[in-house]
Image (cartoon, rainbow, N blue to C red; front, top):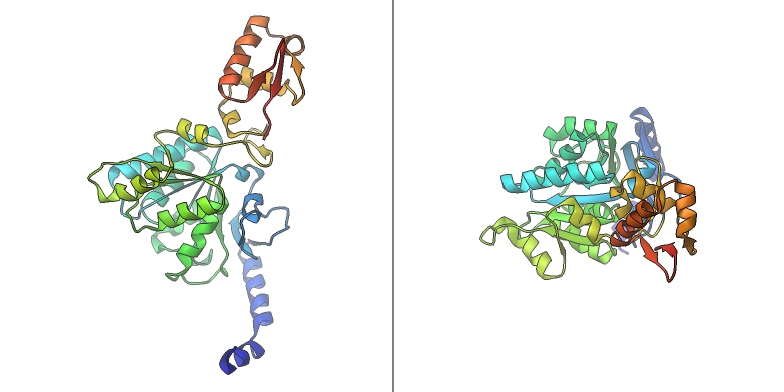
Length: 321
């Protein structure tokens, strides 16, 4: 360590700066979260370099353990914008929280798609939560904070800088069960998010595009490397595996697998009557009040969803993570 750095450390005013940040957060209703707090996102705590401090403008909810990230280029085609918005709408309706970076283009379409369906969305910034970039997204950030949260690991008034955006991309993927890339060039921040996702054990998915379009080359590289191809929200559900920890759906139900979000009322009722121990079909019929034929057809549907497993005889068991 050099003399200049040693002198800077010795004379630093970190304590007074911390007090100023805390006062700023109190004035603007910004939550300060640290690992171990009850409201600190569980998925984010699992990555190897979680932020020591997370500033939250808005509110995080228990349902935000079911997050999907949608990222892509800042100058997409109309096809890319339509696809990002449609996926965000459909995934929001299914019960997922949409995560993105508040940038122009695909990020903006993803946030607006979720907001349009009265769904939840999280924006992760490369600046402070009171220094919105780009500046024209001030109103969008306000809407997100009312219907989700604007998040950053940087102090609230920190200005954006080039190196902060690749750093924040690890948080976009870290908050999410999967990252979907919608249009990306070969040198794209969205591919950095995809790389973080792979390193963090998250699913990586990509939307295909035209083979002669530079906007599609990044997605096609991901597909060649093994990313799951996405055409609809159903593809996303099929790509996701069991959850490491039970999650809460927007309807207040305990979810062990994302596919449970697409179940109808009857399927959900039958599933909840099945334990992780062998459960008799006769018991399900008795407690559900459904006919034997209806219960058997519902069990078959749940088997197709890979949520139940039929054992020998008249017994079924619930698949667990």
